[in-house]
Each structure stands twice: as structure tokens, then as C-alpha cells.
Length: 225
Ligand code: CA
Image 1: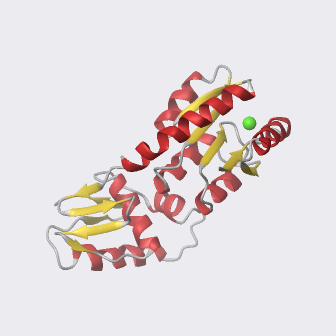
Image 2 (image 1 turned 90 degrees about the horizontal axis):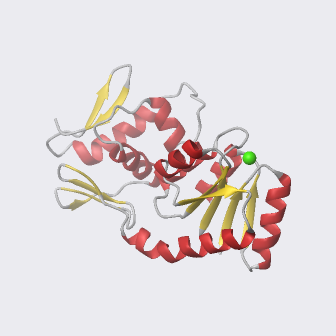
């Protein structure tokens, strides 16, 4: 398996890297949150091991953002003893399992095997996102409105997937920048407006009801109205 390990403690990272490599896995290591997130979003990993307390960006936040893009990749969170609330939040954020430090390496291997066994099921059960007669299938990347296939670029797809996942909720531009553009740095450009307009042309222009709504000064919301 190709495993992404996000862990800032050098001893733990080295121990896990050695052990997993000995088990014939390929291991990519990140030692802070932002790097972990970047690698997770860029790479095709079979599994992600994610420490919770990380410099730059917490494991929870990394998990949440990875999930918004990749519902299928198994994520095992590592938490320190006593972070009970974080365990629960980790599962809420989309982690598949967690392991409390310190743990035995055999325990980690057992958890990884269980996660990977579960994976085909998980992948098959990725729900299709739907609003009115618009559907988006995260697994097949197929988007349809009123039964007609709609061709989207990768970025348009990510943006629509993100908005649909949180349909009915107001999504701010900062949220979109962080989750779709993977940056929290607002360049002051109108890139989001441009992409919203692309989406509107493709999924709203020739159809009713309109599904993408702008709330001036607040952001965007997808709903039937
Ligand atoms: Ca840590």
C-alpha cells in the first residue's frame, strides 16, 4: 500500500516509517499539517495515518479537508491519551478509526488491515449528492441535471461537490478558498465569482429552479428556490 503518514514527532514518525516499510508498504511522511494536507490532496494514497496535534493545521482540520475532496480514502487518526473529545471530533470530521498513543505496532497493523478490508464497501457506498434534479456522483465523477450529463472541469467539479455537500448552508468565500483552492490566502482576485459563473452557466442557466444563490457579503448557498 501507499501510505501517507502525517506525524510531527520524529521518534514516532521514524518508528512507524521503519515498521511499515518493513511490511512492504510505501510510506510518504509529512511533519506538519499544511504539508500533510497538500500531500493528501495531491497523492493517490491507499491510506492516511494522521496525528491529531500537528504544527500549522490540526489533524482534525486536515481530516475534514481531505474528506471534502476524497470521501473514500481510509483515515486512521492518532490521538494522545485523554483527548477523548478529539476522538469523537475526529470521527465527526471523517476519520474511519483512531488509535490512542502509545500503541503497539501490531495494534496499528491490525487497524490498518481492518480499514483496508472495509474499503471496497466504503468506496461503493459513497453517496450520490443530489439537489432537485441535479446529481453528482463522487465515485464516477458524473454530473447530471434533469437527466442530462454535464461536463465540468476538475475545479468546477470540486467546487460543485463542495457546495452540494453542504447544500442549504451558507458557504463563505473563505470556506471555498480553503476547501476548493486549498489556500486561505485571499488574493483579492475574483476567481471564485468566475468559477461560480462557470457553474451557473452549466447547471442553472438552461434549467429551473435555480440552485446556486449568492448572498451578498456572505457567500453562496445551494438550495431549491
Ligand atoms: Ca503530534
